[in-house]
Amino acid sequence: MTKWLPRPDQDARPRYLALANAIAADIGAGRLLFSAKLPTQRELAHALGLSVHTVSSAYAELERRGLIAGEVGRGTYVTFRSDHGEPRFILGRREKEIIDLSILRPAIGAIHSDRIAAALAEIAGSGDHAAMLACRPISGFDSHRVAGAHWLNLHGHDVAPEQVMIVNGCAHGILVALATLTKPGDIVATEALTDHGLIALASVLHFRLREIDFDTDGLRPDAFERACRQGSVKVLVVTPNYSNPTATLMPEDRRRQIAEIAQRYDVTIVEDDVFLPLLPEQMPPLAAFDRKRACYITSLTKSLVSGLRVGYLVAPEMMMPRLETRLRASSWMATPLVSEIAARWIMDGTARLLADWQREELAARGAILREHLADHLYCAPPGAPHAFLDLPPAWRPANFATHARLAGVAVTPAEPFVVGENPEPQAIRVTLGAATSRRQLSTGLERLATLFAEEPEPAYINV
Image (cartoon, rainbow, N blue to C red; front, side, top):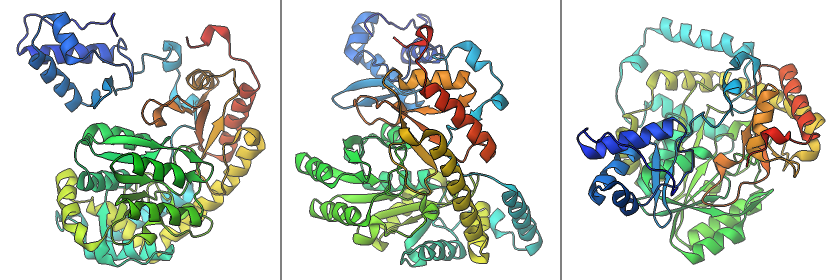
């Protein structure tokens, strides 16, 4: 970063905004790439002849825009991903030519269109339009909370409606929970490879992520306990079912061990169970082993329909008023119309029908994955909607993703999921639901298998 300096408009006022705009322009133009470290405020102030206060205000403005993030003890980094790192001829490809194995979403069939049309017609003809007109109660209509509790209890839980808060999907639920449980500077532990949404949330809420080692059974209890002994871990965010991106499935005894460690060290568990309905067999949540403190969050977005952004946050009764305050601040309330569709589907059996369809479809697509790339799977639990693939030594993940795109397949390299400064694993993530059909999925995986067997072209190697 010693060679880069922004060029703010010398005549523009206020100066901090001119500096922020100049840095934002360099990020947008690709002159500052994702994860690039910025100079310290004092270094940049000295280089540009500005006050430290001016630079500090500019950095604060850029952080507000979501372009950079500061981490205590590490520095300030670019958090915005521009497309300038890709060759222009790749960006010029028509999206319909790309087989999408990068977006983690459920498979879609004719059954979904039919059910959505029926639900909308039923609501329109019911004469009860409260779901379109209401802006309260904050935690959700009683009928929606009853349906949420019913859905969870169908999957082996034991919760009452008053423990359930309606949120706009799992990501929103995690935001509400962590905004309630943490303050800036607190340590939040999670798997060393975790959902990139949590990494982004750390820069918004200003908590510090601490990576915990994992294996093919998920987060390791010994590594979690070691982290608890080393410092004041406040919260553990964990995805025991099909962790993103590794697709690990945590066995019951390990869930119990982690919950016991969390209780011993006074760590609150936030459980992300977004893939709950996809499990072929019921598994107890970690929250079942710590009902007095743990927060549990699931949704229908990743298992039924992507646009059905409805989630259910379950928490101890004493925590609900604080959670409701953060829910109101972040979205006032979950979208009632979408919550109404979800509630009707749960109560009339449609949700279960769609979940059954999804499991069957993913089982078939998983078989196609194993047919083409079985030797490269990090782990392969039944029903997983995605897979983590180990790359041959000759490939770098970003370079492989570029070649895959040239071959007409979109995949995700490991880098966006890395917590902290850990090295990027030699791996990529592929998803099974985004492809429009099993045939298209098979074509995409066949192209990837061909790449796995090849050496990267020297002209494209990232250096």
